[in-house]
Length: 391
Image (cartoon, rainbow, N blue to C red):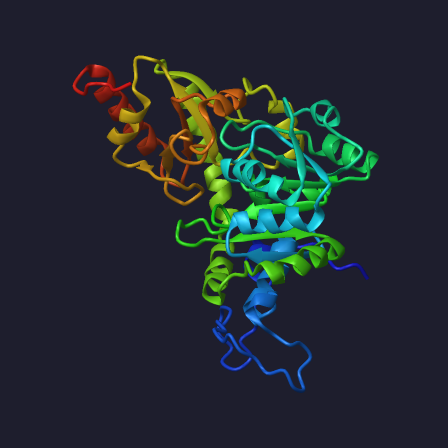
């Protein structure tokens, strides 16, 4: 008899728990040991091998959330991305990457791949035809990010999956901005799904972690390199991440609602010239986002009118924090040119469409009315002339 499929919040709460057989506690006990027995045991456990009790259990939860056979957790999102890419690439291979990407991924490719003899191409856009134009005889991987950081572009998962299969390539996605709550790329045929678990999976701005979900075969291949790279996650952080995942469904759904509210408010504000959010009908890929996402996410970006200094505006915010990361329960803003994409040249940022005045907005779980009031008071201060704008 086929087992009944359980819901998202049930997966978040119960799958991948470590049972407290001794005291029957309601939550997973934390096993802090870095040394385990090797005689007369079914599994030889070692933290760098990703198989301590807490690590092993959390990997099951990650896999369940992304509808995959297996998962791995890492010390950071970049550890997850780097290890996964290098597991499928070697000297002489070629990879096609989406042009609009997280700055850390972009830097990894342009600064490190040449050292390993790996060739790469960035697409001009994010449509399937843009990727197909860049495919070569030695191409092995297609890498995408949707929604993208920081411009919230939407890439067609089904089209990329079919393109990869047509050319016998491995398709990979950074699913951080969407989270497993809003998007499951495996359901569209994507092969490997990666996350900065620091973000929506963690959700409280207090841990650093990464995650990968895929088939048993792919995860085994990634693990083969991961155990040598050594990017494992401490069991205390594993335990904290499992705690955070219990409420991910509730948090992200609340952030979806708030972000839609804020995007509509900003789009109607005369101080704002452009809003990037897939939940808006004005977004060029709005219909595609509706087709492949269950919710539009808590991330958006916007540009202020030239009469308003974007940097000073962020300094005048009182409730919304100016902060470098994203996806916490608290709302935050940042300038991509100063943080996530600061290592890109001005020309590279311009090519991606990232303006110097672009503000990335991670919407939290506060009441939207309070967020709007904070934005209004900051705009009033900057525009009124009480503060001298700096260029």
